[in-house]
Length: 184
Image (cartoon, rainbow, N blue to C red):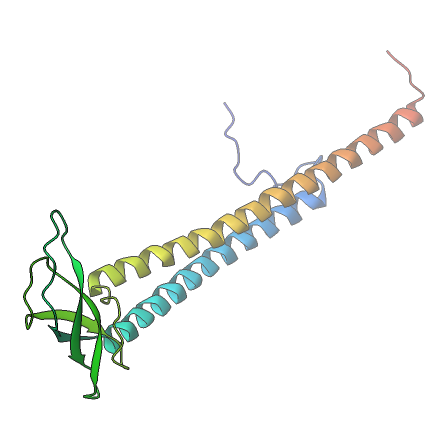
């Protein structure tokens, strides 16, 4: 039994057209470029997000906010909004509404997160969560590059295949006209 060659497009064959070899080399080049592009895109996205999350962690500060009123005791609530005072990183006094446990008394200290201007902000992502997200988005961007390259190859193959089929049909029509429609 003869073994099939995986390089059927580039091996010598009397029916092989030049376009087969060109197509094979183009697909190989696109595949290698897609692989390199995927690695670069994934690395850049992951490093960029990791850097952004690091800046966010550096810009957020945990401060103690002192409640100015008693927190209402709502049944079933885990957090309620209560007016409070806190100090910004530059030392200025700030006032606003913070979330505290139900039934917290006036004067209780609640930990809140602020930005560099002293405005309330969401807590920064934990380092492990930020690294995980950066890795996931980096991997997704790498996958996106590969999918786009693969779709480009599939579309190119369909277009080239259609043109090749039309060319074969034209060549057979010309050969048929030359042979004079004789059936043996």
